[in-house]
Image (cartoon, rainbow, N blue to C red):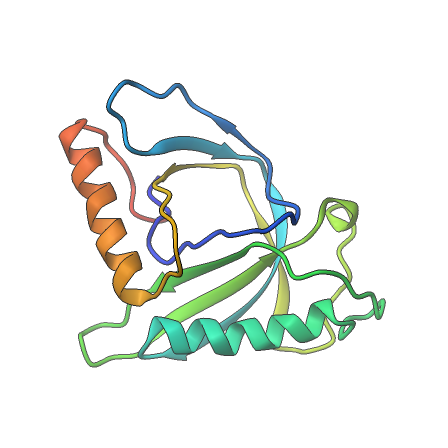
Amino acid sequence: MLKAVGKALFSTGLQNPKYTEGEKKEGQDYEIRTYLATNWVSTTLSDMEWDAALSAGFRKLFKYIQGNNQNSESGDDAPVSCRVDPGAGPACESQFTVSFYIPEEHQAAPPQPSDPDVFVEHRKEFTAYVRTYGGFSNEKIKREELLKLIESLKRDAVHYKEQE
């Protein structure tokens, strides 16, 4: 399953979702990762632009990790993902689901959000084709990297689902 659209996992010493790596073939410029089932805290919003949606969603979720939850527990911000469900046309708003990974110590019983727009989301195990790149990312760079990933998958005759 291709989860590159809108997915930007990043971390600097923080906990990451656990995954196993598939076998990498010579010349392959992407990884095949199978992520275990995990819990994430998420919020969904509508916007025309990825960067604006990510920023607004990040701020809502940051309040959750600063203690705006039923246990008043705070912690570090975590790897972030953003799923995009495109609008019906080029001038339509898309639905963005911005999510923070819930650290391992809270996976079994995540603190429930106090904000009604924030929810705990259980993600089933999934396999993703992952292309990594350095530097600061933005909407334009993500799109370019996604197109490179798709080109590589086509080159290697890999069949994938864009999203479930």
